[in-house]
Length: 205
Image (cartoon, rainbow, N blue to C red):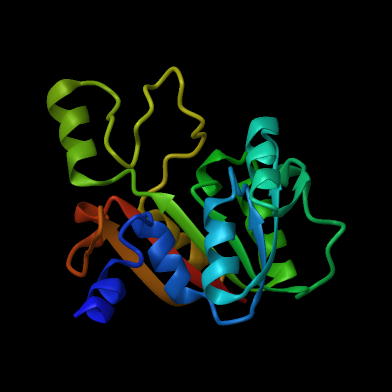
């Protein structure tokens, strides 16, 4: 009974997108987390998947949080490129909740695909139906759980949908190996561009 309880609750305090990425990453993998924030995801992957990981982050307070978690992190702007990293030097490069914040999306993604054998991309779906309703009926930029910022304080520069990213991968001939669509903790199977708040893609060249 106790064993069953531990099994079902061990990830209950973990963010749904972090849980999904945890399932996508192989055991004892090497990871580069671009825009790693305070290091919650990277720390989780090291602890649960025995990963060898490092992060890149620009925010000084977030870097201090990473150091407090004993993570290896470099201060840098991922828009500046990954020239210090060799081709396919990591099993996974992760861009979770950071792609929509970079200036040069195409350049950053191509560099991530060069450095990583596989790339995991997670982003908020700007075509989520509640966002559409808020814009259509309220006439204002939407604020949702996945998009909690007001227009004047948002770090987001690009407002992409799940369909936008699928089209991008098709045009750029990027292979989509797996995809996960989430609405809070629920997996969305039907019409994800309408009903999912978050899209997570495992991609490769």
